[in-house]
Length: 78
Image (cartoon, rainbow, N blue to C red; front, side, top):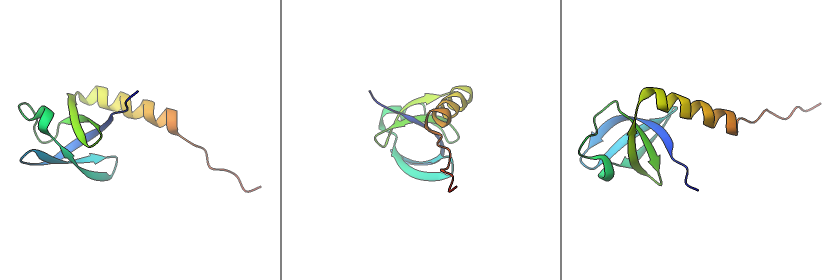
């Protein structure tokens, strides 16, 4: 199983871009989406490469699902 994380593309520099993942910014490869990508697009990123451009709605639903799946309550010290 592969996991792709949604990120918002904030800068394009050739075949690389800078994506924001909820406040964490990482450089990503844009090779697979070069023909259609533009600044401000939501992308699904796997192993450092944008695999697909997705809608804002799909990005928000995916972020919500990931948050629900991986949300961990703090351990109380009582």
